[in-house]
Length: 487
Ligand code: NAP
Ligand code: MG
Image (cartoon, rainbow, N blue to C red; front, side, top):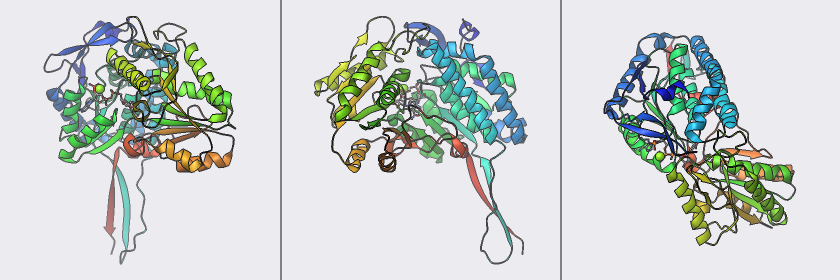
């Protein structure tokens, strides 16, 4: 058993592990078994206030404020190495807390987090302003400076807890910010172990603070706190909207990575074997609890039977099991509540006339397992097609002689705009679709294309701003224009 689980869980504030002010706790549950793993401290407004003050002090005085960019790079690289060294333990904690397969947790969640740190470490020394050629009368020296935006509140969801926390911490620290992280109430474990490693590799006190607790308490207090300069949030669109309203008090900057209902288009000329495999992985990976999941499949009528049959076969073959079992491919959903929510969507789809051709049932037992599900005969007005389910449920629609214009319009007929995939061997079809789709990320003939160099984020109600790439780290800076009169 990891040592983290052999002690009461605490908050990290100003480099110290402390209990929460109220003393309140909540059970942390293993969704594969329903068993209690640990007691989480429920931080609240008082703890958030302490954490924000610590972050402010670390930002403005002390070693972090004076630290050269190259030293920030070295610290981030040390943290990446520490993640690798403790990778098996971190993966075990992630699997216990989310139910996802251990192999996936080790390779993807932990591996991804370490690489994210390395990618962003390099940016610390490359955040420059520019000289500008101004046309003011006389002689001027005009330039821009990039400065850390300040104290940043980071709020993350439960689907990819460690990698999501790191995807915000890494660019924020590369830019020289200090942070207060609020993990999802359901999944605090890897964030807290990460906090221990952050302390161990030598980040100064107050640079990273971690306050576990409820979104409506700790999260809300962080978003509303006047000492926070920016909030970066990943989660549901509904909470994203609430965050915008709460952030208005001091007009703090807000970045939002929200939900999606991403379309996948399979044209008749596609490499169908690869397309089928990718369509199945795109909706069933992480038990469908992925913001960019390809949840609406548009398939040409001429290949629909083969594609639906292929994806349905994959759904039936996938081994749904606790993540600690060696051959597990798909774990449970995160909670009993989430299972009820997903099953309510399946029922609503059936009631509205959709047909379930694979799965469609919850799996009996202590864990929160659901069969990977494929629904056909879905229509644009159905709830299952309009709303994000955040579970392993694929909704299939067909197209026939639609023009690319019409087809893209069908894909764009959603409040969301996070991701989309196109499967065709025809360059013209691919490029025409790429231009027409209103989504922040478009993939062509690719199952997954997550790379830290590529900006990630949403159009429309899928969010504000981009993570990853230069844009992702610049999002943690303010831009200052400086004009010096040399006359
Ligand atoms: P959520 O309820 O929006 O929660 C996300 C985070 O916000 C959690 O830490 C949550 O705390 C906190 N929170 C909740 N209410 C808050 C409030 N009023 N003020 C401040 N913080 C608050 O989402 P979830 O249920 O954890 O995750 C599922 C949703 O997240 C899905 O809809 C999915 O689309 C979205 N998601 C999007 C992305 C993306 O990159 N676009 C990635 C992953 C997930 P609690 O844990 O206490 O609720
Ligand atoms: Mg929630």
